[in-house]
Image (cartoon, rainbow, N blue to C red; front, side, top):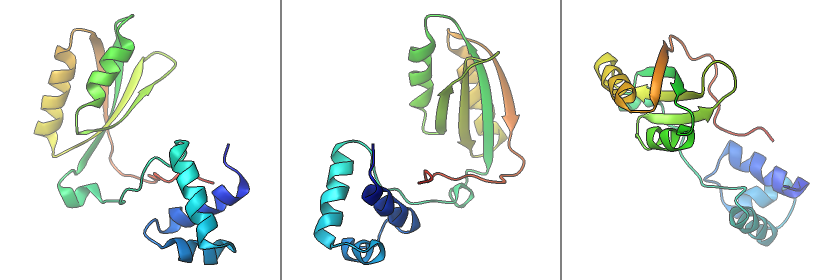
Length: 147
């Protein structure tokens, strides 16, 4: 569990992950060595898993987002999900409750790219059925975890 000091550091990193330890320390009212120690501790414990840029996918030509519900044969769920997750176009794979077994979120370079992806999905032996939803407008998409 992350303590209050760790939460303050994460809030500062959420605002700007490129700021120095000294800048973080000044913002949260502690010393740079304390910040360094706490960050290393959270990294070692797996609470901080990395630092990534927030990139506009459209700037990279990935202007089509799809949410795909899958029905997967029993006994092969995890293996199939892991195989799907390896595709670079896939940003998330969720194991879900309800009528569907899995939810896949992906970004594509257009309809042809999505079409090829879906056909490949349906050709996999354990994928029984899919329903694809195209995202028309992104109202909110936040990758930072609220602290």
